[in-house]
Every structure is written in C-alpha cells, then in structure tokens.
Image (tube, rainbow, N blue to C red):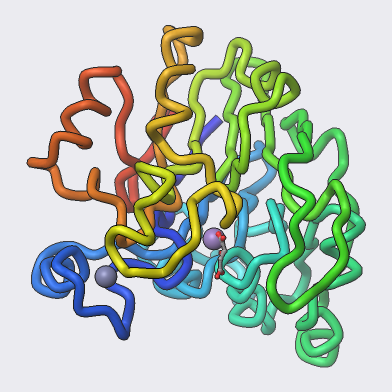
Length: 280
Ligand code: MLT
Ligand code: MN
Ligand code: ZN
C-alpha cells in the first residue's frame, strides 16, 4: 500500500490564522502544517482519508494525484471520512467539480453533513456507507466517539471512527480522533505496519495552561499523547506516528522535553507530504 501524508495539523492548521502564540509565530516564518488528511492507493486509484480545508494545496503538491492523461481523468476515486468535523470534511466543497467521486462515511455522518445537498448541483457524487472492500483494500471501521460536531446534536456511536485498512501486505490504522483507549481500538492495532494516531494534545490540561480555555483534551475528544504513548511498547513492530497536531502541543518544538520523550519511546510526529510504504 502506498500512503501519502497530505496534512498533519489539527483544525485551523499551523499557524492558525488568528493566533500569535510562540508556536504559530515561529511557524509563520518557518515551516507550517496543513490540516490532517491522507491519501492511500488501492490498485485502481487513490482514496483520500478525510478531506481537509487545505485539500486543494495538498492535491496540487502531490504528484500521485495529478490529473491526466485524459482531460478530466483523475486518479482520485473517493473519500473516506473519519467524522463529520469541519476540519475533516470542508475539503469536499473544494472538490465540487468532480465528475465522479464517492464519499464514504458512517450513516450518522452521511445524514448530518450540511454541504451534501449544497454540493449536489455542482458535481457527481455518490454518498455511501463504508464498504468492507475497496479495490485491493480491506476496510474495517471501529467506532471511537459518540460526540457530534458542534453544528449537529445527539449522541450516536458512529460520529467518529478509526480505520484499519489492509492490502494483504501492509496494514494502516488511522485514528486522528481518539477520545479513549478501548479494547476494540487496541485490537485494530494487532499486526499494524503503521498507526497514524491522535496527537492533538500532549497533556490533558494543555489547552487551559497555554490558552486559558478551561477544556481538557479528553473533554474535546482527544486522548493526550502522554496517555497513549505508554501503549506503544505493546506493538514493537508498528511504526507509531502522531498526527492531527494542535498548535498548543509542546512536542511540535523539536527541542522540547516532550518531543524527546516521544522519540525515546520510538514514536514520531507525522511529517507533511511524507510517504509510507513502497515508493512509487
Ligand atoms: C476536533 O478535532 O475536535 C474538531 O476538529 C474540533 C473543531 O473543529 O473545532
Ligand atoms: Mn479535528
Ligand atoms: Zn498558536
């Protein structure tokens, strides 16, 4: 399987447009991060995992997603959503000129997406529950969160899922939103080649300490790295990569003790525009 890490930041990206914190300030002159999104190959083409608000920039810089040779031919076949959150779905609107694109999500997310009806007159979309097979890929979803996005209401066990995707050789687990460490989630990691894991926050009280906003990481639906990292040792052959990085996360600074702790545990932060799997 080929995986392209298209974006690695939490909602808002890095820098966030209206933030003057030290991390965003240094990202303004150094290297920033676009919002969390992946592309994976499935033999017959490519699928996006989430559609970030930065998707246009991300597609334009990714050679594997270049259109052609036909005038409107694109290798992009569809989009698999982990949730209905804006930072994972607003990019759909930027893909509205599609001549044929399938959007896969859970029934609850498919029902709730406000821009589904908005997009219908613009392109050709199919909206579908997540299938068990897609091209050469076997797909499993694991429900991880019952919390609706802010624009919706009502709990449902499939508001957010993690994906386990296998092509027979490699297994990718993608969980950019993981509120807690469940047995079901732990089971999806068995034999995984790579896990791209919720790295929004390093500590539970980080948001309050850095911005004064009195919400914990767990209340926001994100298990902090400090609480997922101890599980790393149970999966020694899995490459352990944190993504969906929020601008408050101290591990973003390569010189920080948090970053060094992560490296010492044989984990890493996802890099923009990086490849996993056979290079092609
Ligand atoms: C999240 O990851 O918790 C959401 O993206 C939050 C948001 O969009 O405000
Ligand atoms: Mn998010
Ligand atoms: Zn900031």
